[in-house]
Length: 381
Image 1 (tube, rainbow, N blue to C red):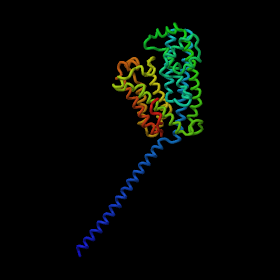
Image 2 (cartoon, rainbow, N blue to C red):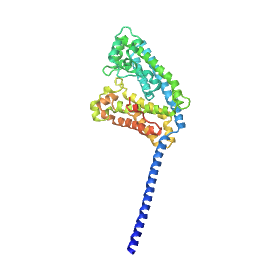
Image 3 (cartoon, one colour):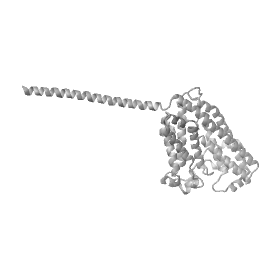
Image 4 (cartoon, helix red, strand yellow):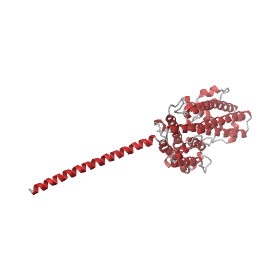
């Protein structure tokens, strides 16, 4: 009888114990799921509140007024000066005027590349940007044009973008096979070269004038995104377009213009003739111009200041350091063409800095500004 009572007591004890364990386990799991839910919700909130609507609008206005519009104004001034130098040189051909003309070409090319991150809106309407700078040029077509007795602006326009703009101008102004004196003499011996130079510059000026004139209006509307803009109903839309283009430009430099020579396997397969603007020896300067444009958008435009004000000082510091490291990069060789040809391993530091900047923009800046990279913006074109 006592044995039965003992067994009953044990049964009751284990039943109660089991019930308590189940309740405790259930509570623990519920709390765990609840914590996970809160954590996930916090992540969502964090991702969607990286920047407020008010801050975004303020930034877009600042970027438009302090970076975008000034850069396009500088592009127009540089282009106007190039056009003027072209007319002066063709009127009185001297070697000093020829050297001055070459420098104006470089300044205009750099000014154009500085707005590379703004390859949307008026810059790309009807592919007008290709008429300003298209590579590779069509040498055969240019040579045919130079052989014509009578040459008009219509002829150059009809020849297509491969015979127009900064790329075509570089071809007739610079050479790595001929000396400066020989290139200058070609304009004395072949008068048609100057005619082609004048008409090509005139046509390019019309295109750049059109782009810069339209940006005077479009840039203001960009700054009004989400308020009274004619083109952007939401401020997030304008910010997304801009940051995607900034990323594209950075990636272009890091993966197509510099990092072609980032390791031994690529170095062996690469050639300096793949460089942008290799004839003029201004490849590195033009890549720096793209980074300079990005820096002006982020720094002059107020993005770095906003990061500092919102406890994101480290990201602001790293972005600025990466951009400055690229802009301050010097080469032991005469230019990037020579460095790639003789000492490509010396470019490792430059490659590293361009890749770091691209990753900072892709992973961290996009997150802080509440932007997602578009599907077609990952190729760097």
